[in-house]
Amino acid sequence: MKAISNFFTHKIKVFPLSICLLFALGMQQSLKAAVFQDNIGNEQTEFRQYKGMVISQENKKPLVFATLTLEGTNISTVTNTEGKFILKIPNSISSGNVLVAFLGYKTSSISLGQLKEENNKISLEVSVTALAEVDVVIPKNAKNLVKETFRKRGDNYFDDPTLMTAFYRETIKKRKKNVSLSEAVVNIYKTPYNIPKRDAVQLYKARKSTDYSKLDTLALKLQGGPFNALYVDMIKYPEYIFTEKSIDDYNFSFERSTRINDQLIFVISFKQRPEIREPLYQGQLFINGEKKILTSAIYTLNITDKNLASRMFVRRKPRNANVYPTEIAYRVDYRERNGRWYYGYSNVLMEFKINWDKKLFNSVYSMTCEMAVTDWEKGMVEDEPKSKEKLRTNIILSDEAIGFADPDFWGEYNIIEPEKSIESAIKKIQRQLKRTRSSGAAAP
Image (cartoon, rainbow, N blue to C red):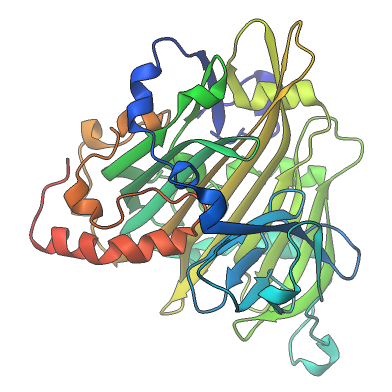
C-alpha cells in the first residue's frame, strides 16, 4: 500500500496496517452470528484469570510479546506493548506450571499456586553468552552488521518460489472485551527473497464472529487482512522499515549476545536518532553474527507525534472524533530448513484511543493480527492463482468471511476461542486441512 502522504514517502514506506472507522447502521442482524468464548455460558464460573506484567530483571523494562504457557497444554497468552498479560485458566485445572519465555532471556517456571489474581510481576533473567569463550569474530559495528544481513538475504533465505499454507487471525477488542474476530487459512505464493516481486495471497477458508453492540456507534474494521502480518517479513520487505536512506535515521548498538536453539545470536538494539521528528521504529534485532542471518525481530513504533501517527494508520473516522494510536508493536520470527531461512510467524498489536467531541470519557480499542506458516512446498510457481483469485492488499477480511461458513471444514473447532494461542488453533484444523486437500476439495 502506498504511503499516506509525501511527508513520509521520502523516508520510509508506511506499513499497510490501517483502521477503517465507519458508523454502524443496521447492524443488529450481525448479532446473530456473534459467538465468543467469553460470552458463552457463565464464564466467571468456568475460568479464573491471572493478571500481571513481565519485565526484564536487568533494567525493569516491560517485555513485549513475552509468552506465558501452561506447561503440557495449549493454554497460553502473550504480553501487550506494556508487558501486561491476562492468563485464563479453566477451573478444571487446579495445578501446573506456567512457563514464561522471551527471546534472549532464560525461561521461568512458576506454579499456578504462586500466581495472584492481580498485580503479578514476573522478572526474567537475561541469557548472556560470554564472547570470550566463543570462537567467533565479533563484529565491530552494529549498523554494518545489520546492513550486511540485509545484503546477504539472497544467500541465506529461500531462493525458490514457494507455496506456503498459513493460519491467520485478527481480533478487535474494546478495552478487554472481544468485539470481532476473524480467522482464515490462506495460501501464500512466496517469491524468492532475492527478487523484488511481491508475494501473492489466496483465501482458502475464512470465518468470523462479530458483536457490533460493543462498538457504541462504530463499526471498526482492519484493512489489509493477512498482508498486515505478511509485510512484517522485513527481510522480504525492508522498504517498510530500513531503506538505504532511512537506515541512517537510526542508531544501532550491541546489547548482548545469547544462545537461541544452539545458535550464537547477537541482540542489536535500534532506535531513531533524537533529531528525527517523524514516527519511526525502535526495538531489537536477533542476528546470527557468523552467518549474517536475522532470526527474529521485535519492535514498536516510536510515537513522537500522535497526529502524525494517526495520519499513518487511520483511513476514515467520524467527524466528531479524534483517533490516536497509543501503542503499535511488531514481531517476526524466521525458521530454517536445509540451510535456508524463511518467514514463519508474525504478530502486530495496535492500541488506540477515540476522543469524542462533547464526551467526558474516551474509548480504548486494541487490534491484533497474527499469522503462522503451517506447511510449505517449493517450486509451485506454475500454480499461482489468476489475478481475480488473489486477495487485494486493501482487503477487509471481516467483510469477506461469512459467519461460521463451512462447518464441515472447521469440524469440532466450531467456537472461535480468542484467548487460545494460534498454535492451538492450528493443531485443531491441520488434520482437516490435509484431509480436504488430499481429497481434491476445491477452494471457495
